Each structure stands twice: as C-alpha cells, then as structure tokens.
Length: 379
Image (cartoon, rainbow, N blue to C red):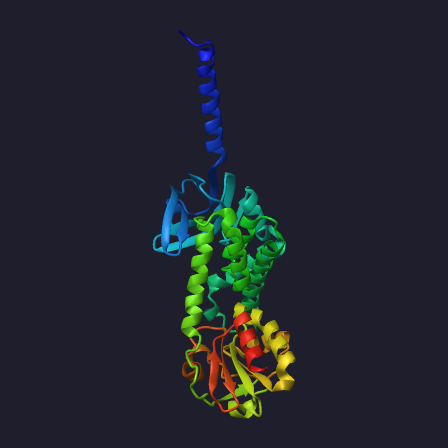
C-alpha cells in the first residue's frame, strides 16, 4: 500500500538538489583575470606547501583574459602564476568562496577585487601611496639597480623598495594585531612569513590550531615555515662560539680608519652587528638593539655596527635615519668583504657577542633569543 507522503518525494528531492547545488556554488572560487600583451601564456592557480605544489586550476590567456575556478576546501593563501617561456610571475591571492576579479597592469602590479579575505589582507594594494611606490619599484627593477650608477639615484631606488615593503608589512601587522578572526590573523602571519616576531606568530598559530583543526593546511604551512626558519637559525647560531674574535680595520662614516679591538675597549661584552641599509629585517631589529644598549651600557655592554653596504650614500642616509649612538663602520665591499668571510656571514642580520677576553660566546641571535642572551650575560 502506498504511503500518504509519497507524493512529497519528488518535491523533497528537487529541494535537496537545489540546496546542494547552492551550497556547492557557495564554496566555489572564481577568478576572472585581465592582462595585456600576454595572449597564449599559461595561467595557473597554485597551492604551494613548501615545495609540494598543487595546481588547482589552469587556463590560457585569450584576448587579454583568463578564468580560473575551483572548489574551496579551506580558505588559504594561494598563487596565481603566469608563465612566459622560462619566466614565471607569481601573485598572492586568497582562495575563498565567491567571484573575484584580477587585473595585471602593464607595470606588473596586480589588483584583486571581491572576496572578504582578499579585501582584508590585500587592502593596502589599493592605497595611492602603495600604488605609487609599487609602480616606481617595478620601474626600477626593469632598469636594474646594478645599472643605476648615480649613488643618489641608486639610494632613492632602494628607498622606494623599502617604502613599498614597509607599507605592506604595516598593513599585515595591523591585521595580525587587531583582527578578531583567528584565520585572518594566521593568514596575515603566513603572508609576512611569521615576521617580525616569529615566537608571537607561533603562539597565535598554536592558539588557532584547535579551532581551525590540526590538519588545517594553513596551520601546517605556518608550522612548516617556523620549522624551516628555526632550522636555518640553528645552523647559523653558535657557528663561531668558543672561537677568538678576529680583529680588523674599517672606516667610519667620516672616513676615519677604525680598529675593532680599540672599540671593544673595556666592555664586558660587545655585540658586533652586521647589517645594511637595504636589509628590512636588520632595520626592524634596531629598536631592540637600542633598548638593549640603553639598558646595559652602564653595566659594560657595547655595540659595534658593521654595514654590508656598497653605496656610501645609502649607508650614510640610513645611518642618519636610524640615529646610531654606537660605532658604525664598513669597508663598503658588501658580501665580497674579507671581514664578512672571516666571520662566516652568509646572510643578515647576523652578529657575534665578544667577551672581555676576546672570545665569541654567542652568534647569530635575533629578537627574543638575543634579548634573553644579553640579559643572561649582563646579570
């Protein structure tokens, strides 16, 4: 015997199918792109987990346009890559449900509209100050910094690069510090590669893990990023510990010849800090160095800055801006300097801490690690 509600089944199935299709549409990412002079080039949407790249969608530029779409399993940062022969350009976007538009301007600057998370995390890209700096930076890149021979023009080109990156970092750090949404904050940390405070970033990641899920690709990406950075730091950290310091002579900003041993003087401990005007992480570290210097100078702590700049104009301008109160020297030879080779500096910021007997007691510490070590030594 037929049940009374059997005639409702087709209607129920229709409603169920409609709701399912609507839910699927709600979880779909669509990106319509406009580019100029790139017809025939391959465009891909790529999710990259530290070398394990997954291609989520592919298209070819036709009549200056492309279209990428895929389902959204998790809201995460991904890349739009555009390949021309052996050259590939990559642009960050957020994989999230909804329809978005992508424009690549002739300068090489990108703009994305649509999407809640794209707007939150890349909002700085629509600010006039950023647009001006980004376009100028890309124009300088086309010239090639090595081809800009005039010291002042070279310095100004570097300042444009720093300004552009500072605007980006300021925005992402503001999102990290003020957003009430855990996923947004973790994505901001990942886009900034956990900088400027890796430990603080990882505290947030560990706080977010139970909420977002331990298997969240975003959480796993942040942890892998932290692991790689920690490994790199540990490889450099302690590289010269226990060795005697190597004396050298370099020039001050005034051109005076200065010997390191003379600068060590009667200090109990001296931090020899390697930096450069163009090094953003080095510049970020300077407020901490000033704090450590001011707190410990009277106890016998000193700092000597050695710049890896090759352009004296850039070194001078950056030094004036940072207003160093400790000795600041260089041989203006960059990474080709024998001093850099002797101290095994492969990247900056880098440093060694030298005790009163001339022995290196620590090396290549940054942030909290450096602060804790100085506090421990100066007790």
